[in-house]
Amino acid sequence: MDAGFNASLIARAEAIAPKQFDAVRLPLVHAWLQHLPEPAAVWARLFAYRDAVDEPLARSVLGEALIQALKSANALQSTNGQLRASLRLMPFAGLLLGSDEVDARFDPVMGPGATTFELWRAVEISDSPRVLDIGCGAGSLALAAARAGAREVVGVDLDPRAVAYARFNAKLNGISNARFEAGDLSAPVAGQRFELIVSQPPFVTQPASVAATTYLHGGRRGDELALRMLSELPPLLGERGRAIALFDSADDEALIDRLTAAVNDPTLRIIAVAAKGLGADQQALGYASTSHSKLGPDYAAAAIAYREHLRELGIERTRHVLVLVERPDSDGAPRFSARVDTDGARLHDAAALTQLRRALDAAALPDAALLQLSVRPSPHALFVHERSLAGTCDDRLRIRFEGGHASDRELSEAAAALIEILAQTHTLTEAVEHYAQMCRATPEQVAASVARFVRESLVNGLLVLERQ
Ligand SMILES: C[S@@+](CC[C@H](N)C(=O)[O-])C[C@H]1O[C@@H](n2cnc3c(N)ncnc32)[C@H](O)[C@@H]1O
Image (cartoon, rainbow, N blue to C red):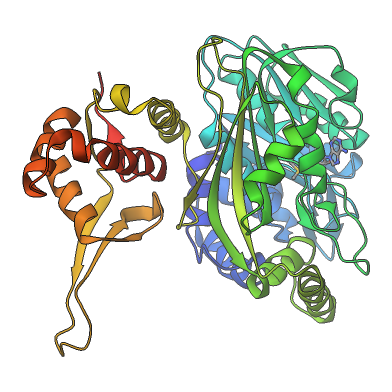
């Protein structure tokens, strides 16, 4: 960290060909790092981007004593005057975290990756909660929660090497209020309660011909382990407890039913924010690249095996889903299950989730109470009017969301008129009056349809509540 090996250097490297798989982009990342003069570039080449570094250069940056120590710990290997690391070290949420280099061994321990970062963005640590991380890997989320102010954190992982790494990482980062246990899902913490549970279980689908990897495969379909994890949540969630999990699941109508059936507790609220995932071809390439960082016959065989397997399962597209399971704070608070889709690949961050929770609470109100509120169109929504210059089709009115904040959609003329009114009025009571005038009706006659539109639009992100 003193050498400048930090999150901002990693962010610069990650900005190189960002949507390409490592097999394709790493040569460019290596070339960029090789030209950087700062010592942090040597750390990044060795410990973040699996490059081979000439021993004299590595010695000038790390020092002889550290190189010898890492060699004797089998974390650095020397071949033909060059060093390579089997230890990965990644800056994450103000920590430096060790894990296996995924190519270095079969069944590696996963350190912080893109999906870890995605889940962490959605987590809010307030009121010093007691936190559980199910499937903690190298302890990334648990330790980040401890660093962000959690009172106590517990991480559980099936893989004892993951637990060993997590304990090592706690020491490396000077964190003393974190405990790590080996075991299946929540078994090691049975009978305990937590205010916050985080989990990124393995969620990759597993073809029979691909050897099962603990950090990656979640079952034949992929989401089986995630659903089993959800089924264990109810007794673990303390008063006002909240769980937040991230995984992929097939993109079908039954998604929210699968989640609700897994949790199987009508006293809990379930909110699923589902980002548009990849089509099966892309997904197969992505899954193959997780275990093959070089292109070649093994990569090709794995990509084909994943593609065939998805075809057999009838999965043509997946959704990347952030699932919240919450124990509401009072008996009067509404319980519901809701699925909210976002068309971009972007999932909600903690601030957007808070806004969504407020919107869902409002949408659950009866019409009369709902129409007392003040709402406005989302700041990310753009009104788009399309007209065929050749006059070959009718005009189309659409809402487009910048940055994939919600799903784009077509609007009827009535809905478009109502959204224009809502953009200009302060309260829903006023909006109902204006809309009634426009329809040459009484406010009582249009109130129910305005309430229906407002309810749907709060849930799908077109309208947001004014701060009260
Ligand atoms: C996708 S990794 C996530 C690691 C880490 N939480 C993160 O976000 O970077 C999934 C983790 O779940 C662990 N795991 C797999 N099956 C498990 C099970 N049945 N019980 C507990 N942990 C399990 C794996 O060993 C792996 O560390």
